[in-house]
Length: 94
Image 1 (cartoon, rainbow, N blue to C red):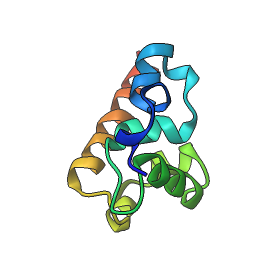
Image 2 (image 1 turned 135 degrees about the vertical axis):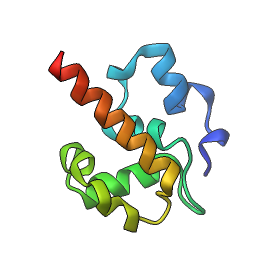
Image 3 (image 1 turned 45 degrees about the vertical axis):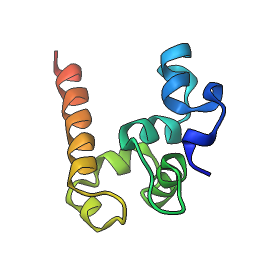
Image 4 (image 1 turned 90 degrees about the horizontal axis):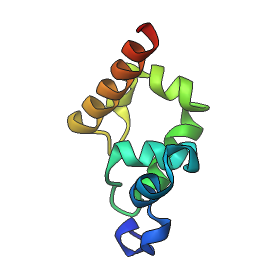
């Protein structure tokens, strides 16, 4: 079921805004970055699959060019991931 059909209180983006990022699971945070899923999978389902495939957040964020082979991660979504990773790196360096 598409996230748009979920109750508003259960949608990751709305929960993040209402309760803060700490209230979300890893999959929900990745889903917020993804913004949308693929046919037959919500963004949360796709995020769960990615986290399982890469054995967690760290390896997913280190995947880099490997993400080009993942169905549903086109150039725009990969760019969003790259931007989020770079912002995190810069934050850690400050």
